[in-house]
Length: 265
Image (cartoon, rainbow, N blue to C red; front, side, top):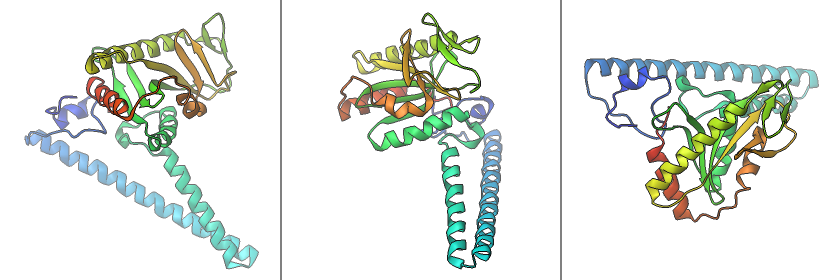
């Protein structure tokens, strides 16, 4: 993304901008108006978040008081209140996203993102919502670690419909999902070419669809070059790569991807 792009231009694009970079402003009256609107939006979101936590704290306290009265033991009440508060914290952390709230990704993307936070602690580099120059494609998650480089698109499908492979074609109920496989493969191949040109050697990018909702008859199954994986098995799938990259190679590929794959947010 061009660092000279104004905030006003970024606000007009539905999926532009970056959580990893800073946008420079020109100081025009329009930009000042946009900065004021952004601050107001942020303030409203922060205020709403504060009110939400006050309400949650009240619910936890009420549950604790009621439990203590019924058990006639204040320690029981305190334990219940703490349990409710912890449950709220866990729920909130699972919904948290690095993407700004006004650019909220899908539920499937957030679930994959939550799993990738763990992989980051293991040395993996992660980029979210990266576009393909010259097209409308998007790689929801680009990951590079010791086992290689990966491109994941996160999908949420109706859990009531079965998923099956019929003659190397993917169906969700009676609906064909082959177009999504072709898109994921094309995005990965484009990223592969761009990153390879950037680093000056061949880089392989392994594409996948992470499916949430229906139970898949497999944890991971390759169809026409794309791994179709159960969304809950993303971390397991990332460890299945055959590459053996050094720390320097990981950093080099991640930086190249950041440069050649523009951020959608």
